[in-house]
Length: 345
Image 1 (cartoon, rainbow, N blue to C red):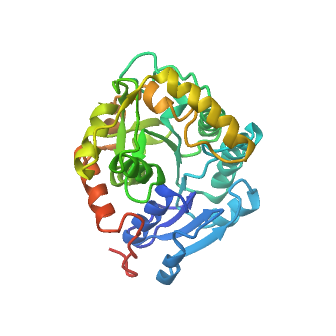
Image 2: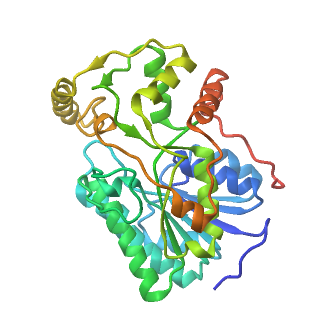
């Protein structure tokens, strides 16, 4: 197995490097002085980093075993963030191909390459609808959507590989990750600022969040902690808040008006109609039964295991994370990823 790399010598693979979390992680790894192999279908967000000479971009299908072997050659750490996510008209077979079978072949690839740590980014979505809050890693998983079901199955594939072959894997289950560069974050801020946001019901549903900078720190800790090997770990900020508090804080920052409240059955009916209309066009509906789970599905978790096995402590409160996000929006820097120092820092 490869020896642990020192700062400036670690070779890192980031799958899903063109996405929100992945692109931030690439920047972070470059700042730490590491060399990065970035793998995704679209790497437009990070193509500028080719100038550093420490990024190798591979625009390809993460489920291709040949591509996986090419990416993992000489790798010390692999961060597996790529996934078939929530979108319009994605067949269940595609979720399984990307979220399960790609994880299976990646486990084999990492073993053959002698990777010293595989950090797999899963989701608290694997729990489905929570019966009791706050939940923890021992809570029952009852996934409902194809995305949730296949993410859980992908976890089990990797844990089985750890048990049978000693694959050094750590699985993170993040709560809702928000911050600059996230389309969902930008959409939420914009709709509240422009007075287009509608509160579904009373807004008392709990929402647990984690700011992108804390998420990146959790990923780094997962790559280093020996106690985290073979573990599933939930990461979030200090605790959940009611959605109406989340919306009120964004309203205050953006000077948006207080959003109107609409009964959930009304929104549910509108979502059903929108799904059919937009589905016929092959597009994702702006309102759907799935998106309405934002107002109906509690997400509240304990992060005790993250504190214990990762040494993780969230640095950002929700208020601080939202404030920094809004500042970047106002300065026109929300979508900008800064170019790291070529020498590392």
